[in-house]
Length: 563
Image (tube, rainbow, N blue to C red):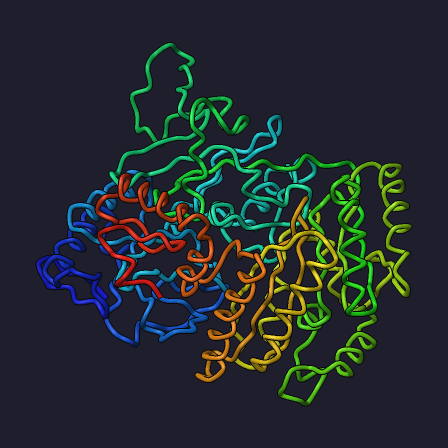
């Protein structure tokens, strides 16, 4: 809807403590910065139209488990440059308006682009700030803006004939923001799968509107002509080592901007993987549910010794079944698939209860040597089978993973969300030790609760060097209020259950941030107290993403707003 000068602006939900007059004044000044076409005010319920992964919305969470109009934006703003972001932040401070920055809006399962604090103004950074600023073959890195997706970065390499020199690392679905996923500590599946570990150098707009570069970026690059740079700070060429050495000198600040609300990251360096000189993906099917214990104990030493070079996954049968079909293709039951049903699906798809996907990298001699060790180790499990992609003619998950594990973005993994009609999902993501006992206990605890809630267990263990991300996909019917309530209750129960066992989540949906933050409460909750002190010192007006990761500023008291 057009915003006319001088006319009052009335959103569906005002920012807390803000009058219509103050909000109107803020919006009109923002329009002067970005132009009227780049500001949208959410005025009515009719503006809350659910989007899709391909066409995300920025007004609310498309997979909402609470009321649709609870975590809702008051307005959406599309800045086109770093100076515009700075100006908006300064205006937010002037008018005491909370902002919620987002990159692409595809953080589905964790809340999408919705703000944690109702009435916040969402900054859609990725719509116009979407450039690949640099790719260095020599240094094997890229420098990107918030709107660069994994698919977009891959396309850039292809268009510039660099795909044979450099590989990117991709998550399961290739449409997310490289910058956003990395800041949220997302993972991929090549040897460069820990995205936060592979980042190097940030540019950040602080709550004051000031611009900062971290690491070596804080050291100015001497100009080639001897003249001091006189242009915009955000366009000044970075130090030649900015994307090569992450630490610089003094305190290492980058972690303050990961899963946090202390700044708006406008540039991020990410390391790329040099072509390893050879590649082979594989699948190992593991027949019985209880084989999980033995499989994980086999995986641990191989991963620590880097025999397993990449970030492999140990996937439950229903996750694979959901990629190649829907629940109705396997059963007529509306309840959780029973043991006989799981066995039938395994037989139909020629898969195990657990299915291990990995890859070999390097020259042929290296790959053969590694494969002989891996195959011998897993052969200790009775009934395992080994496959390369060419061994299976029909469409299967291995064909998808074959692309993912070499950094080629895909979108096939979206299909399991349609396991049931009107499919939506929440991710429950606890961390586990890489031991068979821990994996079996965590699987047993989560599967029991999922079944009690009337859902199917759909999950995977993603294996890091010394831990596993256990990703449980809670698929519910978004058009069924009872299904939504059961999903919400389930994940709250799982958080409490896992905390009782000493397991914490690494990432979560907006509605669960407070609960999870409260489980990290060693020594009278000193970590949260420290985070709150930093927040109030750096952002005294509390304008940036109040409530993100459970960190509430004094301006928006936790006692009032926590869930």
